[in-house]
Length: 388
Image (cartoon, rainbow, N blue to C red; front, side, top):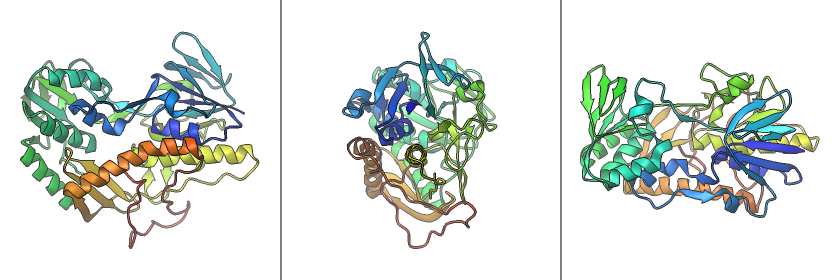
């Protein structure tokens, strides 16, 4: 069977490496390297590298790598079109184009830095100090603000949040983050909604905020490729899939990672994160392998257990959550939390090498089956595969 995987992030590479290598497997990526996206804030702050050549990850697997940006899917002809005119046919398609920063607000694209411009932002910060504002009170914004404040003391850092910073965390988690922000000198602007951006200024519901550098980490969206091709999508543009992660409109297409709206029993639609993106991808590969061998495909099962946030290199928060991803009052903080977060990041990347060497080695915590009640949380501990 000819299987084409589009996208080479955590989800795309997990699926590709886990597929039975009797298939002909092609990975199409806009870049020739894999980027550890969960470490981009570290890279901006000065970490030497967070990228690995895809050729190194796929060495010895027989996977064909094609470098090019996907511009169109022809679902009738079962063909992927790439910038420059090349067409790649498939029998089964794995859609793993992931998510990207939402830059739809006026002025964001023209006047801010996003994680997609990490190298440019890194260079700008190294060129000199001044005032820097990070927009986004979620985990991405928190990590970026604290990392930069710790590593670049010549910059005065602020964090703008439309509601409470770390709103999805427990009281204990939020209090620890607030304390870390104060320790690092980060000024928090909570309940501040950005309405537009101009050069060096945020226009908000509470007035203007000026800055020499604006970093946008407010929200993420998915590429329009799926919707434009005719795949069934939800209101956010994420492809709708059944319990086996197959498109509800096109059974020869599987959708993994952030691009898919995956129903998690007891928890609702999957949130965009590496924590669930890799299990989704691994299960999709298992389903494709099973169907190709004439076996029954099983529905996806997953259980949330933690959210992890780094607060620079020596502090962090590990937030215990229930099966539905809602926070409990159990948290781990400080150096111990920073250590746990580091191990999780290492595990996520290391799992790709594990799948290259031994297919099926990646494991995750299973939740209830479809139709079952909400999973219990008592007596459970966090596995290494849990994360953001």
